[in-house]
Amino acid sequence: MSLQACVFSTRLGWFGSVGQERRVWRLVMGHRTAAEAWAALYHHFADEKLVESDWYPALRKKLEEFAAGKRVSFDNINVRTEHRTEFQQKVILATRAVGFGETVSYGELAARAGSPNAARAAGTVMANNEVPIIIPCHRVLASGGKIGGFSAPQGIDLKRRLLELESSAKS
Image (cartoon, rainbow, N blue to C red; front, side):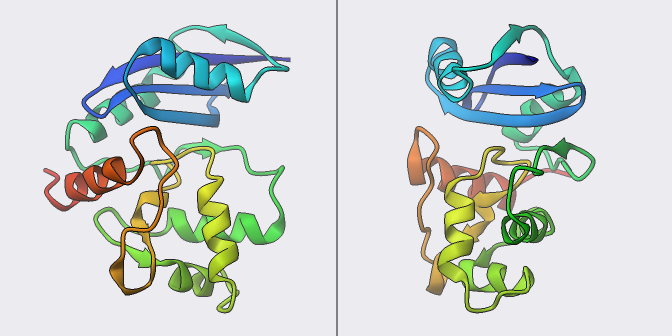
C-alpha cells in the first residue's frame, strides 16, 4: 500500500503529513528542518511505502494559516481512527470538540468522553496523538491549569506557543 506524504515550512517549524486520498494518518510538527520532518515520518512508516508529493494542499494551506495565527477549523478533516479502541475514539471525538482557544483538563476530557474516572487514560490517548492540531491535544491541560506534557520536538514550549497563538488569533 502506498501512502502520500509531504513536508512544508510554517512559522511553527517544519510540518509533515501522511495519508491516503483525503484521510490523514499522521501529522508531525515543530521540526527545525525539512530533513527532520521527513525522518520523523519515515520513522513512523518504516514498513510502508511513502510517496513524496504535494499531498492534500488544502490541509497544508489550513496548517500554514493556523501557524500564522489565523483562526482555522479542522472539523472537516478526516483522520484515521479505526485502529483505535472504542474508548480512544471517544476521547479523540471529545478532543476534537474542544473549541479554538478553549482548554480542558484531562479529567474533564475523560468525563466528556463518558469515562469520568479515566483522566490518566485520556492523557495516554493525548500522548499518543498521531495528528496534533487536527486533534487538538495542545488544548488539554493538567489539573489546576498546569501545562502538562507535549510530545512534539519543541515539547511544552511549542504547546505554550500553540495556546498563545490561539488566544490571540485573528478571525
